[in-house]
Length: 431
Image: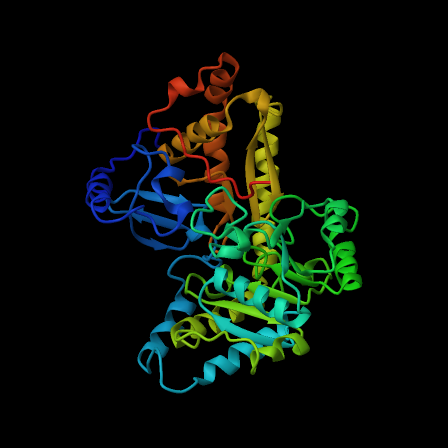
């Protein structure tokens, strides 16, 4: 196991070129240099296969970011890539609807509990906005309640600290609720509340039947419930959190894991609500029926069904969690570090007693990168994460923890950093 920083000369040179043309240089906030310690981490990737990626300098890493979510089976997964290649020979985008649009809709109807009707698109933010728009049309109400992260569109991002360019009138139509706080839900239930959109889980587990009670309160108020299943769909269960927790929302949105990296997104929901798209609500896109992504979707879901991928993710992820907790006990670090979340997507947390969370995260990321692991506090599991990968990861933690503990207890972690401290992600909510 290596303990030296990788050479990232080509990455840094490309970064300097990009700064002249792009503001910021990244198309996805979570992939940018601010989230991977500058001067230590690779910046540009060349290729990937399975659970591994290679940067432009030729360094190999075991990856736990998984494209920030979309890679559910593994990079360059043969069955999915072959389906894409087969469709590529027949065409990509056409002048009429393609049969794959229907076949994907039928598959989603089969596996997603609330999928009486399906719309197909390309981006998670787009289907979130489509869900909000049709909820407003159906209820004839204007206000939206949010809980979680729902993309870049005005109705949501106006609630965050990066709200420049959003008119105040739009900001005033969105309120926030707190997860696992049913009283905050009750407080939001006005006569003008069109919908509640939330991530059914992020890392915290629902308590006291929170999701079930949320659904009941929404129904009683005539408010539509929307599950943002970008992370939970096809990972927690094939049908997402609504299947896992047996709570059927009025509408749900999916993306990320369902096509193993290809850009596709889905809105599913009640037929009486979704039928408004026929004539009353406009939501159409040129690339919604793009066939390569749809072919990838069918291949990905078929593999997930036939090999019970959600169970595999849970099994491998639990090995990470159990092993991590055992190492915390071994090194007596329980007061400083913990691991939370569901096995398919766990997160490493730092206590206030340990010190500045961004400094601690930067150090641990630095040391994991030295040992050939691309890490950003998460373990986003994919079907290609093997037992050997899990052991390699736990061995890295075991190697790092003794020095890490000494640095924490001596309050000198920052002095051990060899790159820039990570930047905070913008505050998701202002209130």
